[in-house]
Image (cartoon, rainbow, N blue to C red; front, side, top):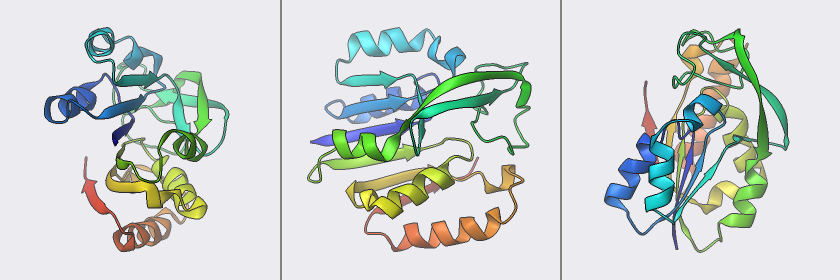
Length: 184
């Protein structure tokens, strides 16, 4: 089975693009921001495409509640994050909300079989480091055939993040998958 998993699905733009070129894929979209989930695009996408499943949660490394930081002037912007040390996009405590986060590696292990062809898109505003490192640790990165990732190390203030980025990027380049890195 061909599977597309969209982590950071925002208002459905990338899901709509995937449907246009891969209409038969099973599509799983994850988006924790309640203002993005309120987009008028989601009801249309879900009504017209039964193979799309939307999860109103943050993809993370364990099941828990997290603070989701947003831009108070643009609540549905793409800048929202669970990472407190993100310094771009105008995110702040002022517009923060509590969101549910799920153990994405556990979800992946349950929902994507080893023989499936998995395309994983990861645009989660700094949380990609925790998540991708956990997929490597658990061996579940081996289920990913194509990885589309946007790194945010230049938007974060965490100490040692540059070294962490280089180590993770090297591991992904050496993994048996097709890697696409996007810069935003």
